[in-house]
Length: 280
Length: 313
Image (cartoon, rainbow over all chains, first blue to last red; front, side, top):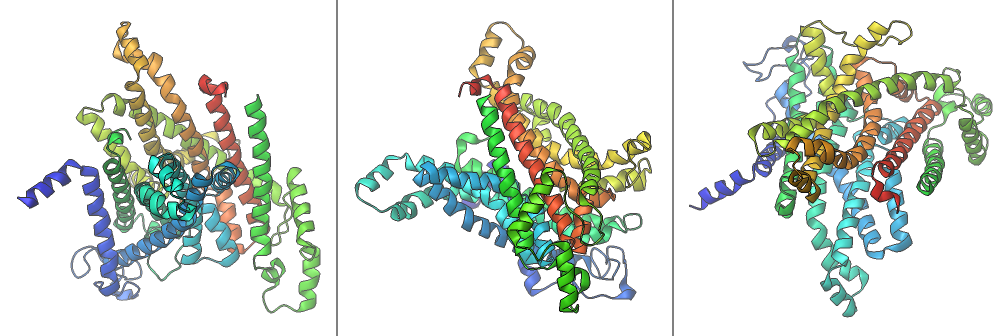
């Protein structure tokens, strides 16, 4: 009985359900790869080059004889790792900025918003390229660049939500009770803007996955031999004439991850704010 | 007019700050161009003389002033590696990237406007849901992946279009166009999917407005009311997205150029990163950032022009 009502609830929110399933699947693959992969994802074996799918290697092997399934799983780990750190970094910078701007108003608010507007002119890709030019390419530079580039989005969302919270009567009441600003921020603002931050995090995570794939594809992300989906796409592009399916798997992986995160974000937004349902 | 002046002033301020940030980033942080050229084993005397000829032994403020002053005249300095003037190289490449971005945006518009309007008009029918689902899937595909897939379908399988390369327009217009089709499609289809969602949402919002009901009550047909009153109102939010997208496409072109081996700004940028030719990196980055800033301001101004309600403010 209970199970059926759960299924019914899930069916009524197809976006949330489909997004949740896709994201869970990728997280599970990433976690599993920490413990087990069918083969060593970096093991090069000339005799096993370009095996077709099926047989011992479920999706075959690449031009170095490395197992594609194992590389996809470890690539998922790279993607999740970069995404989590970059989004965490962006939340840590953006949310306090937005809350401070929304609570204080006036010149500080204007200044913070100017800074975030300005940062928007530096897309993740350009930042990463600049960082790579100075520090060389690494996973860290990619994460920092994506994190800085995503921070303004969080600042804007947090500021708008904070302004709404600050207009509420319970904030007036807290002020009259002589609660400090910090106490109001922690007790009233943060819990009430949590939902929009979560939705934004889901969207930012999708952007981070795209950016990581693009950077690795350009050779500016995670350096080899650590597998990443973008790098797999770059390597397989040379073989587009002979082995097009090698492009297919990492491509599908990137698309599935981004689709899942976007659907999850949409689903969560509808759940948190049902008035928006179907508008976007 | 006041809006125009204010935006232009803030654009200039942003551009100056941006030039400062980019300069500081690539100069103050570790990495000595002289060491890059001579290698880490070079003698102190050699390094000092090379630093002197590059001018990197001067105080940073002087270096910045020199560089920024040059920028105003279109002088981006001389490459530490190839010893060519950087300005003409950037100008050359910028043209290529502009064609790519414009073509991509054109594809996006041609795709998104009809699809978005139909998706909104049919939002209660299965066909509308299918269009929305397709655009949702399209957003999930990065442009470079779309590029690889398009190369596979149209170049490898069908053999109908070239898989890459670039020929200047003046040299051979037909080849130029054929070589740009796939890169523009890969940039445009993905952006088109994003744009479709905004168009749909804007039209959907307008569909529920009172003025549209009034138009229907006057006796206009649904389609007529949508054309005459609905779409002009829906255009305002779409225009903002369009401006932001044009800057996305400009930067996205960096990656797509790599897929199709197109000698644009992105190619120059990545090549100079690989060579650690920091002055070129600095030049290309500032051009791209200023382009993005200008596009943002132009969008903002267009927004004010299109929506008379904003003019009085």
